[in-house]
Length: 198
Ligand SMILES: *[C@@H]1O[C@H](CO)[C@@H](O)[C@H](O)[C@H]1NC(C)=O
Image (cartoon, rainbow, N blue to C red; front, side, top):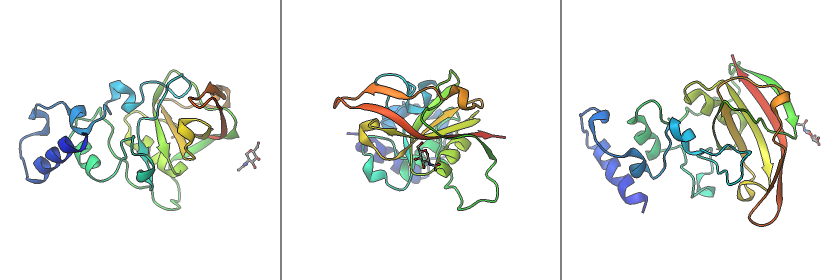
């Protein structure tokens, strides 16, 4: 059902409607099928350390693996560009081997993920560079934490990417998992890395 309104809106966009997007009185989340506004933590209102948490989005090269998540590519990006700033916008694809990406690593390969009150959103990515690119497209984002949530998120092997508005060190990497999953397994965290934007 998501797709019918999506295509309707797309044809609206490509047919060259010149009115300000803000003046088009539609409920954007009903058009794209997801509430990716800042007030809804860009689709992930429950932080990853809480029961029932679910990633808000996917950014990477394998969108077919995540039919239930908004994948930040193609048409959905064009639609998100029409939406006011306090919505998620698609990141630019990160360059390969940039000389400096503007981030400094604050911890490396821990078994705990950052748990802090300045949480902004979380989703799934393929690479650390993609998570940093996400942070660069979220207003106020200062810190990324990437990790593998083993047994979590329906068994996904992708990296979890969670974003925060201030920097954190290893002392806040206190989410070590321990949530019982629907299939009875218990999740745990590996390869947790933190990067502060400066
Ligand atoms: C991360 O830590 C695990 C276990 O503590 C270790 O086996 C692995 O080699 C480490 N990986 C890196 C990239 O340091």
